[in-house]
Length: 159
Image (cartoon, rainbow, N blue to C red; front, side, top):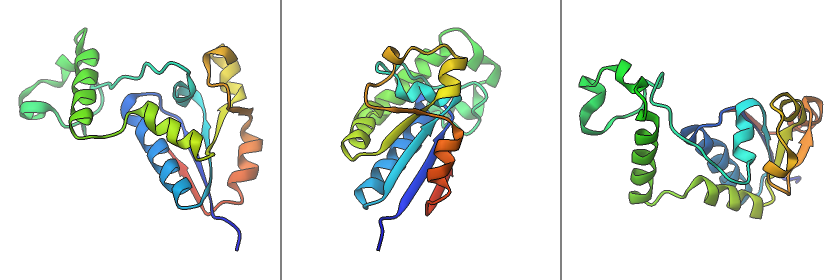
């Protein structure tokens, strides 16, 4: 029986949106799946050598706030300068306290497990990314190449 396959399209480049593709990919790889993550548009941030991911509280009404702030803190204040930095620091501290692996650790696990990381070539060109800014052992491909793999998978996810 051939291995199962999973295809993930990663389109977001914030700290909170970096976790799902790497958690799901590493878990599937551990279960024996052949996995590819196709990073496009803002998802290319996940393939940078040096990650600078943050959490944006603005426009994220599902984000739990400390001290019940989501009940009394006006949403407009999340747009104040420095709030993104504060919320990112709070999220990272909470994750560390709870023993959750960092995005860098999860990404390394994926690489060790032979998860294929693909940078969308069109988006690389669109945003003027340099290959030297991105991880060394990734592939560059277009949508057609990814769809060739995705069309033959057991699970397709858009994140």
